[in-house]
Length: 50
Length: 178
Image 1 (tube, each protein chain N blue to C red):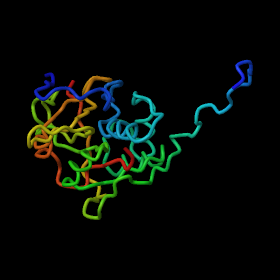
Image 2 (image 1 turned 90 degrees about the vertical axis):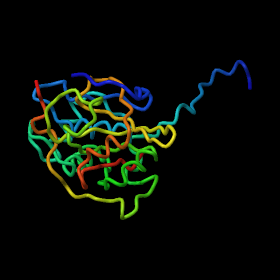
Image 3 (image 1 turned 120 degrees about the horizontal axis):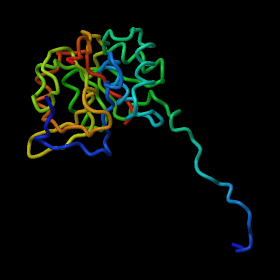
């Protein structure tokens, strides 16, 4: 490499938006027996004791 | 009353508490626990519940100061931030935590072990589990409770202490990204 070369390094950091990663890809699959999407009683009602 | 740490504090590298105590009435333990889970699954979230928690609450279909349900938490996270959260059985919780995921759980506050409690009353409560360690044959899980101070470290708890206080089914939610 020419030490006098002032050309900027344009490679730069990877600008991939990590927030845009596929949110639906489960990295360790759950089995049907693991799943339970039923709803339940409310939480957080009458929580504050102060 | 104050919590204690008979099994130690969870390293901050695993996470810190997102508290619901930034306003009165509080936003709800369910939304702060959901916020913690979302932040564990995806970068870019704040550590304060002021924005994310109320957005999840609103889009989940609940007015302020009215509690929440697990299904509403999942719906709000999906609508607000495109985060997929999945309802899992009580039996699936420990394996999921050991696989590295955040899991929000719904729990009877009065049944929680004394070392985790900061209040004496009873209500349906929601906390997040993240991180684990095994000592001998005992599984410890990292507990992050929105009733604790903002930014504080989590508490290691015996899984059996948590398990005995969980509701039977349908109220536990896991991230699908670690």
